[in-house]
Length: 405
Image 1 (cartoon, rainbow, N blue to C red):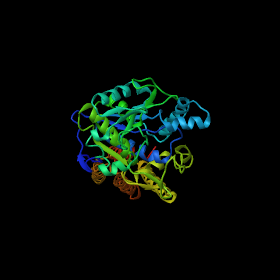
Image 2 (image 1 turned 90 degrees about the vertical axis):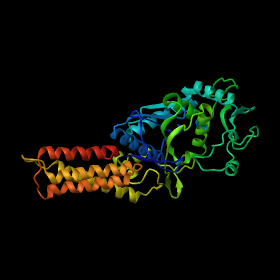
Image 3 (image 1 turned 45 degrees about the vertical axis):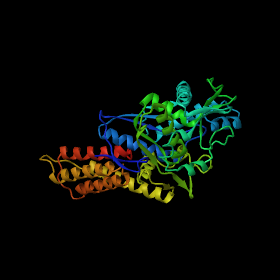
Image 4 (image 1 turned 180 degrees about the horizontal axis):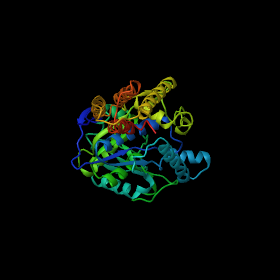
């Protein structure tokens, strides 16, 4: 049985779906610049997770948001003399192009925050009615003290939360309160019961995910840096609004990609853009490299380790090609080969059932390729049915990880 590590419970839990449908939401980018390898690390990981869920036979509904309303976008637009929405659309198109280039094709819907403002306004109104949000002269804020479970995901206690002074504003009741509507005269903006302005960051995602996937759903994913305050805030908003618990059954978070000891970040300026990396390495090479680390583990980007991963991937491909060129003979199935195939299938699934252990799965694929190549070296007799079965299983494995063309 598939077991997944839940960031909220901090343990692996059996994953089941009563109706065979899995609803998954992953936080997408803020589109004010080109996406980089740090994004690729997260989105490749969730693409592999999506592929494996479909491999297991689940009907997957996978949604990702596009944050096209944010201060970073308006600030960048001012710097370059562009319209914020026009700028956002340009980088949104570039993001989709990069996802396709990385063979990330399992996201069914990319949803823009700007297209869910009515739903945001409805959620903000509902939170005010329930007494967990309040209006000031600068906006509408969620009152953290009214939601006792706030901080459970990040593990921060009340004292620690009070020290996290986010969104400095003298009009707030408490330092840890966060905005769900921000009054602002500049574009882009929308009219609301609280005046002209735009949504807070956190409420954009709950408006999108709950509108499409419902009040509760199966998986919410993103990079580990989003746990606080973003995902803590999403839980508070959703559960305070609906009274339903849990908002999400499984919270999954990827480890950060670090470059020279610091996380890769556009704000830090230490980025390698995906489109630039793809000029030097293939999508399969990058996917193999990321898959050689568990999705929850941090990665320190190393050109040496990347080159080593490429050598390993190409060696596996070569061994499989050698087997594929093996001439078949008439006769019964090769019992030895079928045993190797069956064992590879079992162990491959065992690793991925263990919280998507991709490094272990790659080890299985490498050994499987080595075992198959021996049949050619030893000129063992293999009939067409046995050969095709081995080829299909091998290709199914590599397709889950997306490491072969």
